[in-house]
Length: 430
Image (spheres, rainbow, N blue to C red):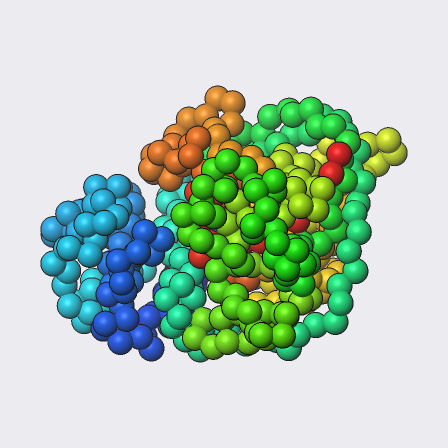
């Protein structure tokens, strides 16, 4: 469900309940042992992650907004993600599954009891959205974990049949001065989107759709993983350290092609589906092999949000590639709706004719995650600032991203070695 303006307590209540149904559905069918999960750098113990979702809501609504302060005792030392180092989350003496789920329910009940039906104060609305989107992001992360560990796909996810070939080609984008980022009148923006500022952009061409699995298989079959020329220094060091010869979930099928693991089952490679589960290093290496490059984030946002005009583009940006109407199944593969056709959803095209810029797969960009000019951290200071300069920007969302969060200015960010994210890429040229 999306969040229409103005934001009311009833709207937030419905969205929080919707988010909670997803959170519970992502863990209800897992055993206690599966909720503990093996110790890996790229996942959290799911039993800890559930408690962290509750703690975040307790901290920013019940405490910060003064609704029943200190609703639960002794939660900071367990679930504060900035105070509890990632490796130590496996060493904590956590409550039982039943007690964690009870904590999760009690915090939400406290919040819902105190939500008015009518319009929310602007400051309150910001924090309610913050905790809602935080839970949505953790739901997507739980889906990453299920894939990483080979658990079953979420029971309600319906994988479509393989699609026919998808036409490719480039779209030429004119250069000019573009306002990158969110404007101050945006209904909601994270601190790393603030604020829109002018950036001069040279003309460029960008692929109409993302790279498909078949196209990436050509790179792997051509020895792309073994040819040092295609890799950055850091990328080559990563490839050697992991002895990677193909994408992480692929295996040779014995007949010159590949199979892939999707959650707990193996399938023939769907050549026409969008490429997914790639590190930034692999995306960059493919671009070098293909004589292309990754788009910068300003190029990506321009192609998604601007409207072509004579000799340039409009100063007014679209909220979504297709316009101002909130995402739905005809425009974007979001909200746990996977897609196997890189050429589907023409109704969601940007004004320049680019396809699936929101949903399907997150798209790696060439840009290092940096603050915009004049950056000031929001009250949740740990959302962006600790991660500047160390990660790469991704844009657009994936099939497991909630549509209510998405817009053209949204910036995601991960270290370039992360392969668990539902991430792919599109290519670009000058």
